[in-house]
Amino acid sequence: MAISICFAILLLISTISYAYECNYTSIISFGNSLADTGNIKNLVSIHHSQPPHFLFPPYGETFFHKPTGRCSNGRLIIDFIAEGLGLPLIPPYVGDKRNLSNKDVGQGVNYAVAGATALSSSFHEARGVSNPTTNATLQVQLKWFKQSLCSTSSDCQQLLKHSLILMGEIGGNDYNHELRAGKPINEVKSFVPLVVKTIIAAVKEVIKLGAKTVIVPGNFPIGCSSSYLTMYNNSDTKMYDNKTGCIIWLNKFAEYHNQLLETELQKIPKFNYHHVNIIYADYYNAAMQLYRSPKEFGFLNGGLKACCGGGGGPYNFNQSVECGGPSSTTCTDPDTYVSWDGVHLTEAAYRLIYKSLFEGSYTMPRFNSLCTNITS
Image 1 (tube, rainbow, N blue to C red):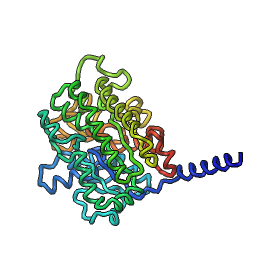
Image 2 (cartoon, rainbow, N blue to C red; image 1 turned 60 degrees about the vertical axis):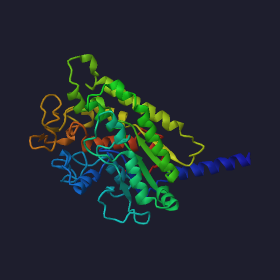
Image 3 (cartoon, rainbow, N blue to C red; image 1 turned 120 degrees about the vertical axis):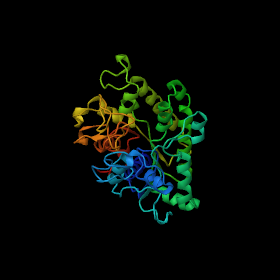
């Protein structure tokens, strides 16, 4: 009996200690425009490419008061994570003047690039679909990471031991580029398992390098995107969700990706990685709250109409009059909109999604049960 009581006390102490252990000294991020804090901006500058529309005002107007390469009017989820952990905003890898190493990494590095895909560019090119923005795929980002921070295994393990890894969101552009090229949904659905397999392989790779906490986000409800609502605009009311106005079949597609991703994450053998926290971030349902009840969250102009654009109509989106272009217009109060430019969300929306994820119940396991000292 005494031994059992002692064991129970030791277990309780270790559990309490673990629950309050949130000493992340850096954030390492991979992904696309949902997390890019400036890599695409610096890549364009280096290669003297034509700057995309999101490198012009009014992008960045709300918080930074200038375009930073973030695809929003202000901060992204990754920015709110950094602030919540008491870390500075995470700088982009490309164009960073620091001598990156485990001894001089600062408090994080961001490898995410707007437009990036999980699968290789050659995969999509073989299907007749080109990436109009970048070839910085997930594998390219992992290569940057290993070259810059993992010159030796011991250095890498020491760095990653106290780092929070954000693996995505990634994969959404594999579908976006294909759908916008006119590929049918059933054809795109056929390679979802390959996209998920690529993400899982990346998760396992960073764990083998020494990562202890990896957050893997799912896809957003793309059927609520102003761009897709405009692209697939249809008089058939059965195509739309009565409560949200979102396109049902597109959201079911996003759910399919997310369900497969979550299932495959659960299959990662726990006996091999018992010391690692692999956390699924439910971006889909965290965002769906805003689309179901936008006014309850302060989005008085609803969830589906873009703040910045030039399309007119119900969604204010037009592919030929993009936000940041000379003919586009911007709403006076972005905080009352969920959608910023028809593809990406406003800072206000990202803030609420962050709170639902990292202070609420939309991560599995719950992040705030592992990291109780994260703040708003």
